[in-house]
Image (cartoon, rainbow, N blue to C red):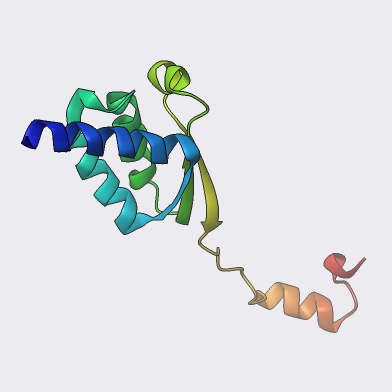
Length: 112
């Protein structure tokens, strides 16, 4: 009976991946643990696990989307992972002493 529940959960997980998911970092870690638990029962599970480990190594995103066009494409090329919301990169707003002098004396090239 436990085998049947695991198989149905794997099919359900494959269905969710095929329709598309939007996940944050904690949900991606949870999905990765589920895929490791199900093993080969999820279509293209090994490829998806490798892609999720790669995206978890990156630190420049907050939420990602995961979608697969079909089970056959998930086996061959994995899933499509896109960044939905990324972390903002701090902009450099402080001027150097030379830029302050140039601006004060009308030589600022950035304003042209």
